[in-house]
Each structure stands twice: as C-alpha cells, then as structure tokens.
Image (cartoon, rainbow, N blue to C red; front, side, top):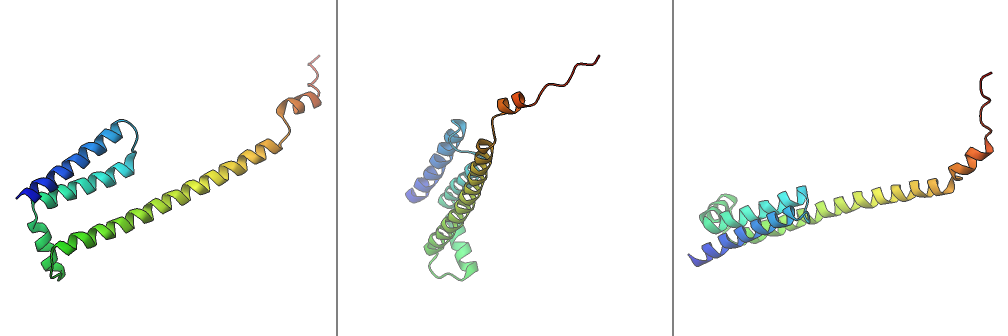
Length: 124
C-alpha cells in the first residue's frame, strides 16, 4: 500500500510543480500538457496498480512491472523526437531571420536614399 501512496504523491507533486512553472511563465503550452499527462499517468498507476496488471495481460507481457518500464522508455523516445523537431524548427527560423538581417544590413541606409532623390516640385 505504501508504494501506491508514494506513486500518487509523486504524481501530485509533479502536477503541482508543472502548474507552478506554468504560472511563473517558465513552461509553455504544449510542454506543460505533456508533463501534466505524465503526472496524471503516474498518479493513476500509483493509485490503481491493477491497471498495469490488466494491460500486461492484454498485451501478453508475462511480468507486469516491465510494462511500465517499456512504456516509459517509449514515451522518452517520443519526447526526444518532439524536442528534436522543435529544435530544428527554431534553428530554421533563426537561420531565416539571420539571412533577413544580413539583407537589411547590406542595403544602403534610408537617409542616403532620401537625400539623393530631389523632392517633387510644388504645384503652381
């Protein structure tokens, strides 16, 4: 029974920690949803360990605790993939912004262009 309470408290602690980080604006949208999902799963599996046993029987796994390890490893791989996708998107965006900045810096200043063009004649 104590492992159930420990797992449930761990899930609640993670959930409150995530909400605190979101409130302080240290963690944003999709990341918060991901970690709140992890907290809820940890809490549910802690409170109801028979879920793990039922899933293990349904999937043909002989030793139910290994199911949690395999699922955790799979979720870590998915999280790593999503982080790499986000990092690639940000790198592409930074590269494009750097190219735009280089183009803007290569253009002559606007004040030089304004002085070289004579003002239009006033209407008579």
